[in-house]
Length: 212
Image (tube, rainbow, N blue to C red):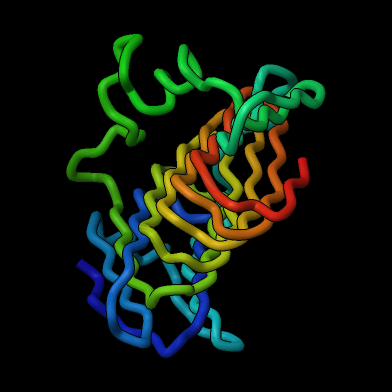
């Protein structure tokens, strides 16, 4: 186990690590980091603070696969009707019942859980606790990412992994290849992009603007 360690930082970046990542919320004014797993894999994760941003990153090894064309779409459940834009489409409103949500939330098709990864003793698990409203930036993570209701801005890119977040502020969301992003609620502008076979689901939110 590495940690818990505490960092005086006002924002969080998680880039280029192979781990299951859980970002929760706590009442302190700093950021707490804990990681469990094999010692050699923990040693490959670096934490540093620059300009008030805590960066948790790997040793530079690339993760994920290439870009896959076609198939993906973004679902924004905000009201009646829907708008579809091209391949890797954007769907605003309308019903999301059926295979898309079934696959995302594990309510059929042999899928029993939302979380991905093989798990087990060799899995590195990174747990981070942040204050409310903390900006979070996650990308190039090889493993399931769960983010609690931070209420702050979220920037997330997945490439072969899944990410679920609670209530956040503005959101920049991208899927490259496979993998799904699910956000319970967005309280600000949304920019969403799918390049591949993955899906983006935003369950609800005010969303003064949507870019896709």
